Image (cartoon, rainbow, N blue to C red; front, side, top):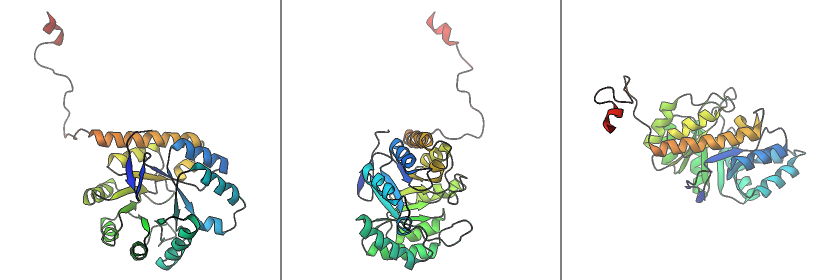
Length: 264
């Protein structure tokens, strides 16, 4: 694991990966994947447990045994009212003021509703929540979320579960440039480790993953590969990449004295 540390929601962490807990072949597979990922934040859906899932006992025992931060989400909400109610229940159940805010406005591509998201975020922040809002890569929406007090913004790379990676890296870069002091997490659409590396190279603080790991042929091995990819992307960003050039440029001298003549 990279020795780099960072802060989010009042916590100091080592891993820049946030990992989801859904869609795995089994609870045991989920546990192994989360462990090898090194992630210190796991997202969970309150509605999954409320539905009376038969595996909920095993699931919660595993989550508790991992000893990492739990980030409940409002998945399944389609209005600010629903999201607020879910967040309030989640705070009681999980004893945390963290909430991953999801308010879906379109069932086709699961695009978040910007108006209801901002409305819910403003209310929840006033209620003392640390809001992790899921949004698109729209700069204006990001600005509205920042204006109502969000310290963390989570724009998508592409639609949830699509695996298409970063559809609009220029938009994501613009958000990073506009908000240098906010914690920015790419949430949704990541499909391959190289996508996560690209997000980190843009200067994003972290990446949230679920489908890309859980739906891989080998989720545990994929979780490990994402761990390395995120570390590599962060190190590359910190190192400072070379500037792109319009034309080719020699990497070795082509004029002057050959190097072997210098030692005669």
